[in-house]
Image (cartoon, one colour):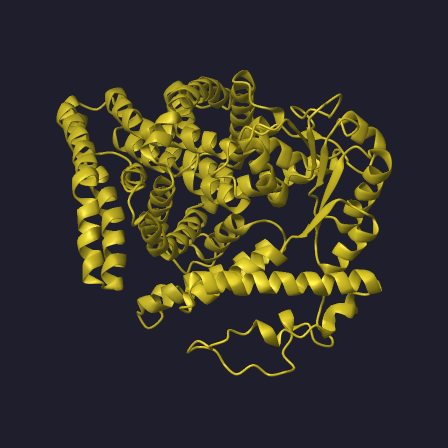
Length: 609
């Protein structure tokens, strides 16, 4: 029985959608297949060509497209106009080159699959328009959107969103129908589009910020959320009226608000709706796969999916390499963008309405695009696992340390190493940085840092890194045993250099003292003391008094540490009672101090700090 007939309740449909997502997505994520494939499979299962609980996937897709719209709005909030301008070469240069090459090649591939030239061109043009929703979701799950490699992909996606407008105009010109039926005031449509774009920019520059300032004074939280939704949906509607991409309108609205003081609040307000609607969009795509069409034309559809995906991936890889992207980045971009996208449905429907293609071609091309979207997360996973099984990450573009002569050698460039290096770089100190994490080295290079590949536990690597001439060696890795090994090696082989080591806790610090390192710092102690000082100030304690108490905590901790060093036992300092750290005149929020209270909870059984 179809869900539509169950008590005539629309609520049953909502429960079915949420239930399918809640069951399928965790299962697919558990299997390592990702949430996108889980949503697509759930949609296929409950759709008209699965269990038949829903009969109109296009209606769901139309609503769920707002998830893509909101995603682009959030991305726009992260892109200030100056940053967007800096990406102009990627958007209009790299994007145009990739699309031109892919369109020509895919048209030829489609013709080889047996499609007429006109249908082949429409199919190729639609397949070139990558799925913004799927690629953005995969980039977001990886945390790549803010990285330069992610920014290039985002730039190409933006150009593809812009491309839908001239493609729809081209379809109208290709139409064999009488001009009166297809023209519909083409120039008027162009003017309306330009007017809608100008209206959105004007509203963003002069209306949006005053509006949010006014609402902030009112102080109604729910009104701010409603205003955020109004901005996103209003921008999308304005672009749709102008015949442009709704997602592009939301993106521009986000860019115009990217320098607003309300940017973070807007992002927080939109986020729950974005995630839910984006999941609903993937469900709708899964429902749209017509299994009857696939079964009736499976040789053409199967060949088309494999051939078009392979050809598009090859073109993207070639363009990326020509534009000097590393092999790993080029391969990643090719795999992520090898599918068709949601704008292809719009193009195919417009082409059928204009008489450029027939209904059968529309159904076949739509099935090819939907299958390519469904296969992309799986292909990404397979390529990732194949790359791992093939000998690890590619070393292309990675320089192995050899003959460096910096004044300071930094071993390990994770978060700790990145922060500590900033003071040295700010004083133009000549540093050499080595690490063994290839992905991190490549990412650091994209941000302007030169990091060499090298394992600091090997004496030959230390010599190649210039440890013999360095004035200081900073060991910043997050491996305790390896840090001790490097510290001991440096102390024995390079006496001219001061050895500084990141300590993980109190016990590790004692081990480093035994190794006679020149300097160590417990990575959490100082930040925790500063955090406690900030907490005191938040409770009304004066800044000077809070600083005095923090300094007293440091002094007593140092005394306790000296006792531990002398005794050779981390428990030796646990008898140091700090009753004298209480203020002489308790502040209103303090409670009476018990005599048994000890520093940092360091009583019997307390863990070392």
